[in-house]
Amino acid sequence: MIYIEQPGFAPWLGFCEALLGCTTVALYDDVQYTEGGFQNRNRVKTPQGAAWLTVPVVRDTGQLIRDTRLSDAFDPDSLLRRVRLTYARAPYVEEALNVLRPALGADHRWLLDLNVDLITQIATALGSRTRLRLTSDMDTTTDSDKSLRLAQITIQANEQVMWAGSGTRGYLDTDSLAGHGISVVWNEFADRHPQYAQTWPRQGFIPGMSFIDAVSATGWAGLAAMLRTGLDAYLPTASTGASA
Image 1 (cartoon, rainbow, N blue to C red):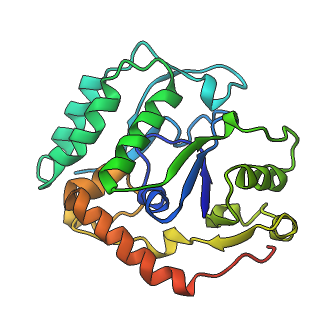
Image 2: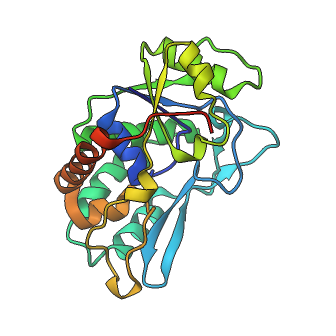
């Protein structure tokens, strides 16, 4: 089973689940960088609620994710200090920092290299055996047919099942994919997001945070167990793709 997603910074638990549940995770790096997306930032929980943790980048019109350079203003030590202070009350914040620190301190020049390094660190910490692939390394079409390109990526990865987020329902042509011998399983993670003992509980539980939030609360072993339990419960009842 393959999951295809743009490489984001400090990704959320839905991405972490894919690292555990899929044999291939393809990082869609040869598409346009999106201002205000999750490619260079993600959310953490503070005393004031959700807040952005951002890696500054050099912006240029029409640039691809793989061609996005880190800004000279990027200060890894400042970012790490902020995480430590934000989650000072969390029992496993050091486990999160131990994965963040090597990637942030590796003197990367490009956002893609930073994100791939961090994703690789996350996969190792979770005990994932997935293969990470870059779509820019694959021979695929450059036309506007998104479903065709996703089919080509899946075929080149030697996969036959696509683990698809609900956000793709608006454009994913499951009939076309079926014509290429590819079936779709909707992961619907947002609807079944697990809850755990977040910091600042009076605010209530806020889903969709960076992995940093959950790891600081549960540790890597706890997070892996929580995600695997949820995945094992969901897969037997998961809906397969039908054209939207």
